[in-house]
Length: 295
Image 1 (cartoon, rainbow, N blue to C red):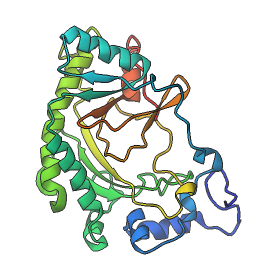
Image 2 (cartoon, rainbow, N blue to C red):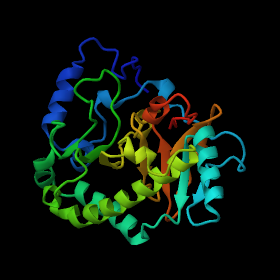
Image 3 (tube, one colour):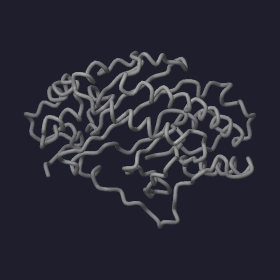
Image 4 (spheres, one colour):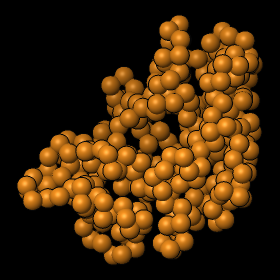
């Protein structure tokens, strides 16, 4: 294994990280483009420090599990108590029986896969680092400004700054899937907003009334097979700088959450969404003792 610095680059003084990053970004092909080109080595700026590459071990026993909340599983008070307990102690939980059909969830995952597996010349039309673009495809949003190692993934983001976005902005290959998915996410957002408000002892429409969940952003990550998987990561430890994240996992897995200093696997539960409390909800009001999730 190469000796690497804290920035995840080669110790050789002749290495020009900025140039390699710029050259890569200008291909507008992302990491999938590297895979399609037959690359057997990954660019140095994707190599993470050794300490980051040590696989976190899921702590505890099989009895330590991320809470699962059945939104139709009993009296409303029991549901509210479960959400509050999970939010205070984990900052993370899964929800089932949430009203989103499985075919919509599967269709979204398939739509994202279809987008990222299109030919380069089709995808590159959407490649952008302009945050004013309502739909943009990119590899690592902070790639050009960070000194840290990049993550091995490509992404497409849909930003609903005013709560609405014309489906004609969506790539044709995933237009229908995204449109249908967003309709259901708006409903689920409303449901979760009401449940969290009540769980906090507030009136049902409180969080909605102060605009906490008014603006949505849909970010879809794609992790192609890596030629040197032991040198890089698809995602590093982080918390979300938002109010709330609704996460749809595929069947591959790999997600973990930090709980009481131990990493706990988040299993792929068919038909479930992962809900995590963001940093913003923690700082919104000091009386809310909710825990932002780190994963």
